[in-house]
Length: 453
Image (cartoon, rainbow, N blue to C red; front, side):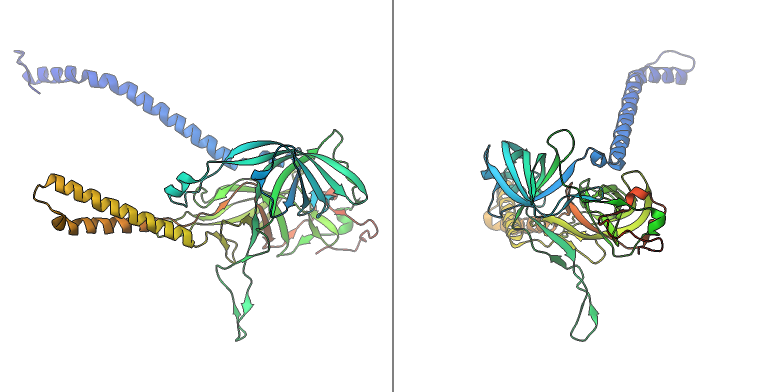
């Protein structure tokens, strides 16, 4: 900066004044920039707080108007994409359907669905596969729209229902391997091994059902007698008691974080002796205990969840300790479960390995040729023989970097995933509402001295 001679008696003061005048435009812009940055920070903070509140809020699936969930098993040769409007689809209920403590529809009941239309739904592309595979994978899938269904019961008229398709797939049940004794007689646990039960061939539809007409679902209800809590005595759920629940929020090893809240809805009542201790509709609350996203060197991700509280439909709460004992997943997920209930991604398959090695070789070859052309264009004396060593080194480094940076399988638990929980600590239900303890067989009412354990 060149200073002007103002003839002032105090030249240093004049220079300071001129410096302030020249810096004035910059100061004039600094205030609006600071205000804009402050507003941006406030907006980002509000968005983060709203997202956090949304993640910790109880989903609306727990309301009284959630309806019933039907799991319909279809023939294995049926393809959803081949269905057309007006087609009739016959299947069977994979499991009983409950409302509170009452069984509404038994397992094995025949279900007839009517295709009312066809719609296209966006397919979620997994980042596990290379981009070239995702590029050619279909972005949408064609699925039928079901609006009506009829359930046939033995000795009863067909029950009309209004239904909506919310999930489908060919699922398998994933459980941890149990301990077995070796030939020497010592217990040897197969760590990180998974037992896949029968399934994966039949197509399963998950439908949300409600009454087709006002007045509720006309099903023949079994007789039930409310049992007084004082008459029944203390009800204790022992460690090892199972509960079949449905996840109400999607989780994944790549996107979920430690401490993230999760909720699950009880589908089948939990019984203690002949009484219903926990009715259908009970909400299990928990959190993500540990979460590791997929990492380099094809290392898979893992997620460990635990449940710490349950809430009855009437709002009563109780602290619990429950862990994951089984989960229904798509047969292509290839997830594993250890003895502590943690889910881990499976090992890369042969197709994944071959595709990535082919892509790595192709990228390395292209980098070799491109670098050779650049060197020969920049250096007039360069030849193929003189640049061969350098380009091969670069190609080898490119190949290694591509292979090393490949990530393993992710663990994804979509919304409405069905799971089995195991209570790890006893739960005493003493003092709960009388309407919760319901007996299905009115013949044997418990005596005053009877206790349930």
